[in-house]
Length: 613
Image 1 (cartoon, rainbow, N blue to C red):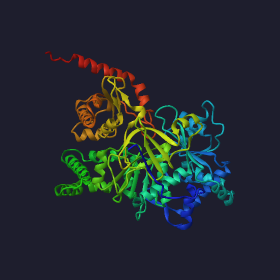
Image 2: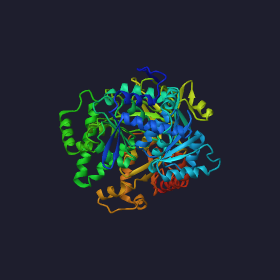
Image 3: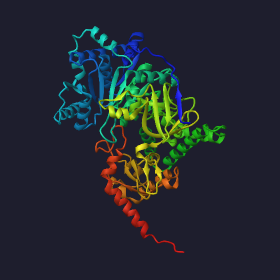
Image 4: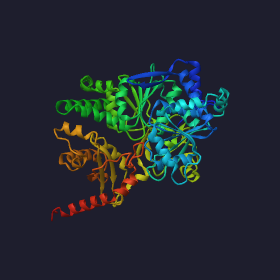
């Protein structure tokens, strides 16, 4: 099958906007909690009425500061309650919030602020403010950028005081002027190649997609006591979609600033559904294994994990799990799996994973644990999800069928095309890129995939990342990289081999996981540099490579790998803020390593004795 559409199920008044749903909640159930903020060790609820009152005061402050309808407001912060308040306030004032990753350099911030023409900014702390001030000094300056408020310095209270004389009628008029067709935000792509492009998303993109998702996944959003915790960066489109869909559903949302804190906060916030990226699920799995401490406890964990995976796989067979497997799973649950549920708060039944491939192993593991992970797919240009698995029909290893109002087509060359309510309207100030990406309403995603007869989509690679070996074999690196990155001590993996005689890989080690892993294997602590050359470490990495090779043809298998003594991080510029490897930059900066790698492999092969007839 090369095209599949899911029809829309909901009609929406075109005059509606995102903040209309906040107003509705405040009027219809004013005391219902919409947000919970962590103060010390306690989660403090914020009612719908109180939230609207605070958002309105901030919106008035923006108006008093001179922010006009349609003008841009930059937000530079980690994920926190105040970000959502500013988002909602900007929308209520008829303005357009523009996210800036809090890890951005002055050059990156300058590009986003200048290209989007932001007039004011709200930042988290003094370091962010300093980044903005440095951006002002760069070539071209930021002549239209006015005031900058710091959240940690009482900036939102200052904004609210500034707007004390703005009448309610002004906010009502501003809000009434915003509808589904109005621009909601400009989100700049992560920029794995070239300069980031500003993706223009409308209120309709968010509202229509959120309502259709809520309706199609009603078992998740309409569950009694439903609530979620947000910990991925709000500068990322997936987090913004979560922010909106949970608001429209009227369910409590908590915020936590980073993934490291998330596991502890999940236990106290106790969400019923979790929306995250695959790296988080890998970290939870690897972290639990590492904390077993080695020996018998580690063996019990691995046996339990294998039981969980086997049980989940059996659920997809006509006969289901055997009596023996059900008994084995019950023991594994008592020993290990129940503790993982407790670590996630004990109430989570569903999770939606997007942003990168999850992998069948983790999908089956978590379903065996009792957490149904619905893998989905989407991009910044599609307001996050175009596809997601459904609770009543899951096909692990796929990203599910299209959401209502969305069509997916597989082009002749295997590229995935998307059309419908989630697709962005344009790249900001970039008509050439817009025309290249959108053809007759179809967005060219750049990803490769296939669909089954039910419209369930399987991602097979990234079009621009396809490697063509010297022998003419096309190789998609992502499946190999994902498998290797699942190893506890692997941080990142970049598969190489374009126009080379065979496929190889550059591997980096995870400095956080390495000490515990070494201790579990009875080894003293090693530096990353020493571990990269350690025979035992390399032996385990070789096993991970061989497992990855087992899923591909012989011509696609990794024949050699090298372990780098430096990791790829956001801080050193090799990862985007959404944790994607900047492949072209890695290949450029490590070209010498790759050349030496192939030269050494060739010399070693030439030196090997050959059999003679």
